[in-house]
Each structure stands twice: as C-alpha cells, then as structure tokens.
Length: 313
Image (cartoon, rainbow, N blue to C red):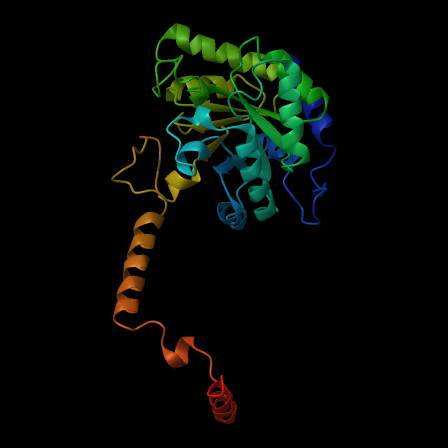
C-alpha cells in the first residue's frame, strides 16, 4: 500500500494525463503515465535504444513504447572501447538527433559516466541540459545505492522522470569485475533487491534489471509496484529492452561479441555488405547507372544549342 502511494505520487508529478501532447510537436507521444497504465494492465513494455536520426525513425515506425538513448552508443556508434569514455556533450549531440527522429516513443537518455557522480548539483545540471536542449522526457541513472538516492529525489522534484538501472551496470564494470552475471549468490541478489526498493521509494518510474538470474528478476518484479525492464533478466519482467545495433545486427557478428540474451531480428550488416558489393559490381560492369532508368533527358534542340555555344568557349 505504501509503495503504491509513493508511485502514484511520482506519476502525478510527471504527468496528469496520458493524452498529453509533446511540447515539442503536435504528435501524441507516450508519457510516463502511459507506461504506468501499461504496467497496471499487465501489458509488456517494449524498449529499444536509438543513437541517431535513422535508428530513431526505425524505433518510431516500430511503435516501440520507450526509446532509450543509451550510453552504449559509445561502443556501437562512436567506436570507443569503454562506455565511460562518452562525454555529456557527445551524448547530447546524439540525443538531439534521436529527438528529431522520433515523435511517438517516450524518449529517455542515459546520464553518462562523469556527468552526475560529483554532486547532486552536477547531476541536476546535466539532466536539465538533456531535457532542455536534447528534448528528452526523462533520464536513466545507474545504481540504486544510498549515495544516488538524493540525486534521484532532486531530479524528480524538479520534474524530471527517472528510470533506475541495477544488476550489471556497465559504467561500473571496472568495480564489479567486468561484464558478467550479477546476483548469483544470496547476498548479491539481496543487494540488488535492496537497490530496487531504494529506487522505488525515491520515486523512479521504472527500473532496468540487467543480467541477473531469471528467478531473482521474477521475485523482484512481483514485489515492486513499478515496472521492471529486463535485459538478460528473463521473461518475467514488466518489459524488455535491447540495443538496436544488436537486435538488427548492424555490426559484423563475426567481429562482435553477442550476449546470450540478445535475439537478432534482422541482419542489417550482411544485407548492407551484400548491397555494397552488388553496387560495386554494377558500377564496374556499367550496369549502373542506366541511361533511361536512372538518368535525365534533354531536348535535342537544346542540346544542339548547348554544343554550338560550348564550341565558342
């Protein structure tokens, strides 16, 4: 009962109606209230990342509920070895591109490493920058320990919805021993559950559970009153999230480590390579462009006039 009242208060703070229209355009955009309604109706919530205008358009056309501008773009888009290399300004650049390409999804952006840890004031300034300039509707922040709670409460108090993230938190991969399953023992699982309770009490509208055992994710989901969004957390969460470059296979699968929990739904990389090879072949064999199919004609008398004038040059 207590948890439900807290969550309802948070929802009222973010939005009074699911029919609100985006302040940036006239297209109806999903809101935090809509996500809460999906959760109450036990309708699974779909979340996919986007990193630029084109991927944002794909997510929009696919009618995905939440479009997450994740800091995974550091690896998938910018080619960094470490997610923590991504700066706030780089994130903002991509957030703006995504916002221009998506009119229907609730857009949430990661607060990148180094943009919120120093102080509540730093985190607030960073989040406001993403909302004001990037035109996102909320932010995601990794970790649910007590140190993060004042930051989350402050962001919510100024009207910025916050999504939590526990389990495998990529920004802290150096501290947790790399990219591996979390919550494997009772203590680890209890720590994750406690973080979820902390986040729920602080007022987050949803929590990402990353790379934890299915049963732990199921237990947590059953004992919270906010949606859980799973990635590598099994089928029992309130919703699921995948990285767009993984699910569409935008990268060469032979050169990329594909996590066990990823399901490729398309093979864009190979399709693209095949298309480029065919294009090269057509150019070399002069099958492209074809004069009539791909070219533009000019009237005979105009061309004759052109030649006469050209000879005078």
